[in-house]
Image (tube, rainbow, N blue to C red; front, side, top):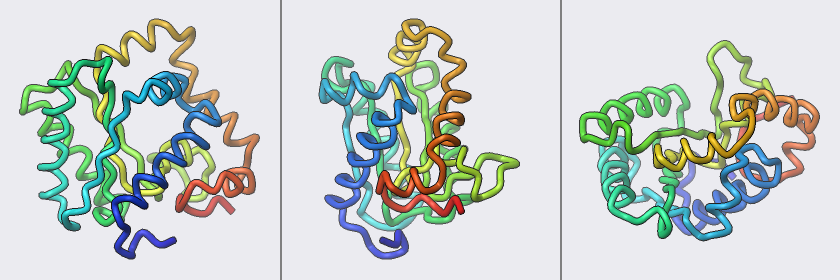
Length: 192
């Protein structure tokens, strides 16, 4: 499946749920994800109104406002999936930086955090085919809004939370390109 084609919102949500269950939870890349998934506290929002980043920014601000007003027991986090927008990773990365500043200006600093995932995610200084990039690769460009309070609580409850990234690299290195491909979690670039 090419993300250059127009992806229906229902397909983008289904693919993202599959990625979350198989890769993020299945490989335990985020030890905090399973609890909110099982409790149904994740909102999957799809921006499919167009392919412009201005519209995506407005959708992000709307989702942030809604998340901030919801009780954490009802909705703890939001994944804003943009299957037809910002397909170029560098453009997406620039957008994410602008989005963080916009969230801070809107008063969400200290309340919400923004994490990002992209099919072509590439850590600075990493080769495009470095399997470590898979830790932040999702089927489509995705903006993840998290509550600061929930993140702090989860980190406090998880021993050695700062070792998660290193453990994830070990997991993915052991899994290898073939293992990642076998997960069948959508586009994510070649690791060969």
